[in-house]
Image 1 (tube, rainbow, N blue to C red):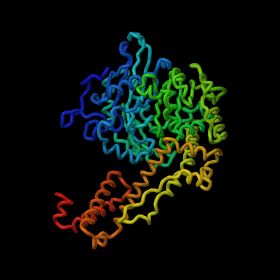
Image 2 (image 1 turned 45 degrees about the vertical axis):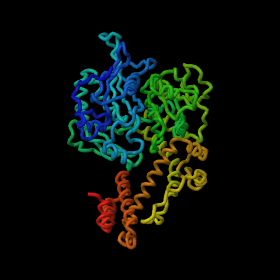
Image 3 (image 1 turned 180 degrees about the vertical axis):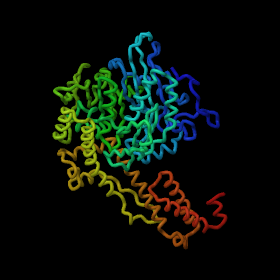
Image 4 (image 1 turned 90 degrees about the vertical axis):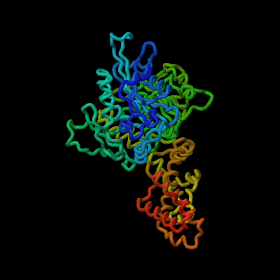
Length: 580
């Protein structure tokens, strides 16, 4: 069912009379709302239609039919989950039809300052779901079944879960008017600015969150009391805007956490079969967060069903499984995805003797029946030896019921140090490919970043490898060789090369501004001066468009050079180079 037209006030049309679609421009009344959310959806169960989209707010936000269908199916647990009561989970879908409008300036500013792993999604939507299923004799089917879904491009799982836990129960009682009021409140929130601590009022509660920045130290939680003394009631402080309780999410697989870290690092295809969308989505999000601060460059779906539009693409046997982490709850996937190299089946969280029951490592050949027991079914052999001391500390902490935050911090620190130990040698080698500053001269094309030679890098590991910062022994060379073939190496290398190219452009511009342009122009032909003007202009446009790391004074000096060069030309040529 489509959202009812005219349910609530519609946003103004643009000057051509057509409604704006997709992400909204900052001038619209919903600019602040769209800094956080794309839209809010309500999905209900219709006896004739099945899952149906009851409401989209704002009502003129356009979703394609394929997106509507995906949201409808992914907003309800499938029949195998048997979720009664209230359940929260999340999903991620591919955006259909490409970008629908230019990105607002605030979005670009956020992405420049935010950690790579927290940048806005450009081609996917996140769906954060609050599902309720309770007995209701007034409904034909005997059950009230409805989901409230927040659709966003931001991976702020912790914030949106907290927001849903506040608004969904109220909405299920009071329906539309409550939702309209909440959306109006969100439209008053300040935009997410990396590095800032924000107070976000909603329904009489103030959520206080810190938006991480690229310059934040890993593991730091610089949550300042942002005007808290003036807030009544006192704010609900979220320890993180995005991080889940990692130790709780990974409890059943703690004994294999390093093997799973390697599978994530290498971008290996992995299916997570869980008893519910909540367990499935948390496990997938926890696994994909294990690589921070490295950006997870592969596709991942916290909750995936047979109705998904990518079902055929992901389950085909005519080609190798794609580099994707799939969270599923339907046992049918065991048969359909039997050809996938790694399948993780987890059950309901259970304790045995005060300890979480650990899944066992099993060969894929044992994965034959739909009632397969929990386990990590893979033929993969880890390159690194596991840290048994860490595992003992975690399991002992769980047994003694130590605070969850302490155990999660311990596990996250271990994974962070492991990832950093792996990446630091790559960063050092990459830095050696940067041309020396003295090789950058003002009036010549700047030198390029030298190519990355894998064998040269591997030779450098003997003197500057991960063994300098990590106590774990194992086949590091073999791990790097496999990493070079993964999407994560490609993503990391492209990003670093782009940053270094921007740095070279900035250094070249500084070199030009430190030179004496009048001395250079002596004896130069008009053609050469015009060529300089055009190149300088092009460089300044790139500097402003790419936001190069250049001081404002340098940009001003470059513009003065452009004016000086134009002023030295004959009047008729000035009119051509600088038309009125």
